[in-house]
Image (cartoon, rainbow, N blue to C red; front, top):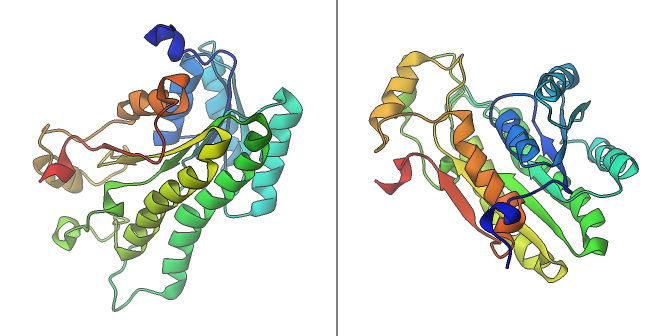
Length: 264
């Protein structure tokens, strides 16, 4: 029987992490690389991905940065084709690219704002999962990890955002998109299980960026039982489990990483 350390070994695996140039994606890419995997990070910000990859290579990690818009099916297929040409396999797809673009409330919100949020978070996740599945199915192996949010199953109190006019809040479009990601994950897990492919979701809580308004960070902290907001590295354990052989019998699961926010 393999040891736990052997089950976490990814030295022969190849992973794609979308939105991997910064924040949560960077942390997850770093975690998988630290476990020995070869990593391709990609986003619309190609130069940022290349800079991040170069920095991680400086720490002895095998990381390549590329450009890719996950809402463009052709670009995602080209990304997967590139990895297949380089490595001959894609073992892990981390469909991380997403984000909140909402800064208005329902009476003033545009349909375009809603559609852009859904396209980036939900449609992009589907495109990435579909493209990865096409090359995983013949191998009868693979791990697809999607990125949800606690706002995919919880609403948000708009009072959390009062007096923060520039903050991109987790409004109804984002909640709808991330709720869709969570249920999409279950559907994909059901369809791809017969091929030995696991599909799971990680739903983070409040993990602020350096630019996040301090007032919002403090309001969030007060709502969290562990009395702190998260940091990007808090996702490293979650992705290590769900992307590695250690999580081989876990599928269709939504792993909540939120410091306890959602237990209230």
